[in-house]
Image 1 (spheres, rainbow, N blue to C red):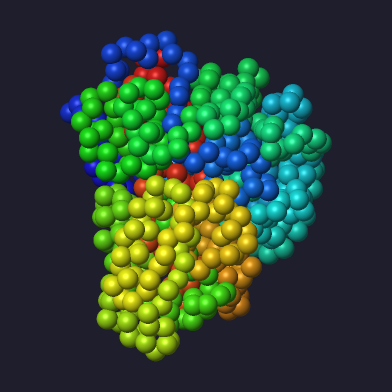
Image 2: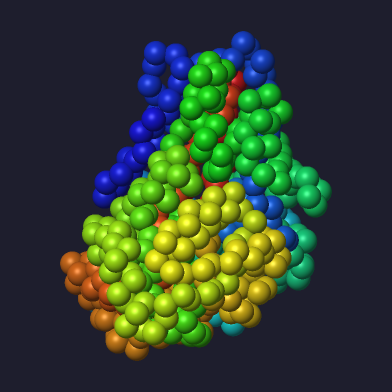
Length: 506
């Protein structure tokens, strides 16, 4: 089993029990011909979306299901983390990098039958700025104006040059909606993608159906059923039994070695942008004290957390920057495991025999990580009491929205989200560093080299302040029928792109 590392993850590695090693998008071996002629697939996931509206509802589950499958943007992010055309067939950038002229594909329609034009681009960007309620909306603050020149040409003017903006347009904030949108997005999705939402059975599944009038290349599979499981073991058992064809983002690492022995299955360890963050509430005691935060950092043996909680699947990164980002740097040595230093810092802070509450969402990775963290903190004199928080409903309300917590742990999956998490003092982390915003702004406006250097400085500032502890980068483990091909195993954004799936004999 190989976990992808490095500056660019150039495709995921597939492990089959046959002799061949093939890439995730190549043809897998047929599992007894059972897939012959099939035009459907069943995908297993944990973490069900609460509704279909990612413009007002936090969490990655909604864009994971809908982006690229139901909704599309002007651009998309490929499996190597690079920006590629989608609804825009091309674009030009002016000399000072403040004006983007997009040429749109002609003949594109939304699933409600309306034509996609430049007017929809204008309203979609405006909707992010005016109507979105999520902190991600700040990614569109740099846009000064949007003008429809014709039905197929739109000009976006930025207030200043931005190295980040075009990439961000390939994530959920870049999703295109109809100009005259009149539906309730929580229950109805209207996009330009190859699938529509055909059925939502709460607590069970969501069914996507292929569109007959899709503007691009039609997907090979006409029906995708995404089944949601309460726990990772049930998800793993379902793929082993053949009840689902693909278990995406499987969160039962202790079962992987056994699944690798099944000749009818392929196991893929893709990379991701998801950091498992030990979240410290900087805005309230005891973590408003730098020494207490640093004590926690020194008290945690991240390698032991990764090995014990997640069977070594994943990668230590030291900051909220995965290796697929251009400004990645290895900061894993910033806080080496040093319980004695942790005790010294707690003594300096007058925080010996500290008791804290640890709000842990009911997710497999969080519950596994929490047990190890509690044990390690106890060793330095911190008594962390686990308080289970049902995810998503309770955790999103109590921790994320109300900031009513001291310490938590959560998987942040949004691409390039370091500034979203640490650049806003009103975010649930409560980290307030005015200098950080200035450094980040200069970096975004600068040359590509200045962008890299500036964002690396931002990452170091956050680490120096021990704002929270990025424990490890989460792997995107996929277990699938050996005959299923076209698997987009690298989660370079929140999206689970299902559009390339096909059966090898179809």
